[in-house]
Length: 420
Ligand code: ADP
Ligand code: MG
Image (cartoon, rainbow, N blue to C red):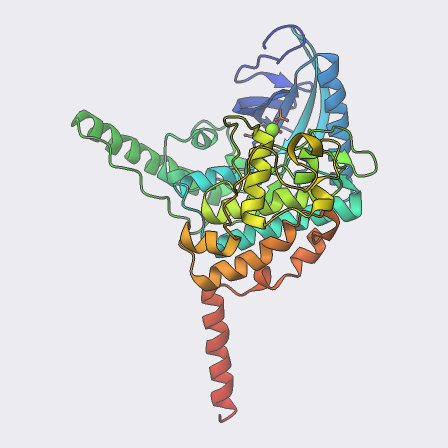
């Protein structure tokens, strides 16, 4: 893809926008772009530089993405809305053509990384709640104030504001900007940050030494334990507006990544903001359990779509006939009674039972979490609660376990004072 019309090849130290940005290392890539960590010499901060492929169709989609990102950034001057911000944009001419570049605030690991660090066991519910709140604040603003549908919400597209215990793992790529920074330190430096960096570097060296010693001794590396999540701030932001659209003019028919795709998209019954709510619920489930809520597979005599619909009905119950037969593609999957044509026998695994039996939730946790998720997974898009309504849900506003104790403690103090 590094040819005419394709990606722009970048080397560490390359400069952009008349020398303002200096490329540090590659952060990632997508179908349309490569993303680089860059140093912004004007603000002395790190930024993410997204360099689009140069062919006209990629440029067109970058223009669209810049339009959406500008609306997001301009509408939220106080940076409170948990959505990625656009810092700048410009054109860069290289051997493969002219590339539109977006300068975005630099964020940390995705919550998919967080799920991996849990060894796919799922995160403590208090952390799931924190992340859900951030996503919902972002979605509420996006839907209600800006009129934008994200259309590709999933753990990969939710990035943490910080990196995960970089000192614990020297081989992680996120260490690099710390180990090979330009002078001044990460985002401005200063004596405190520099001291922290010194410590991080020292720990990284010690860990490298320990690991190579173990390798030299010929021992098998110990199995990795689940990473400690202590001390991480779980604020996060929604990113990747490459597929986002205005609610008033939905573009593509087929949207969303397979596992997070809403039933109305599969059936082509038309969609609106509530498709993001479906993906949100799938994401919340995955955070709490470590497994995708729906992972359909093509099978003997049935398609991935039909398997997907079957999996949904196994957990959520039978789809109302009006909905199952109401889409442009309904006839491919459903007979006129609203039964799937090729997958005849469905198991029944209601959400709260699934959470208890498969994921070992306590009965109480399972019931409460299922009460939060089930309405969002309504087959009828218009019945799903909005992000604004979800933010009011008691499950999200439940004090964490330690919080409850604290409140109780204070309550008893008050009661003692009151002489009870
Ligand atoms: P595409 O639209 O081409 O899929 P994305 O916006 O998803 O591009 O970015 C590709 C990858 O680059 C992401 O998966 C992530 O790893 C990394 N990335 C993107 N934006 C940022 C950012 N602001 N901070 C840190 N990493 C980022
Ligand atoms: Mg992407």
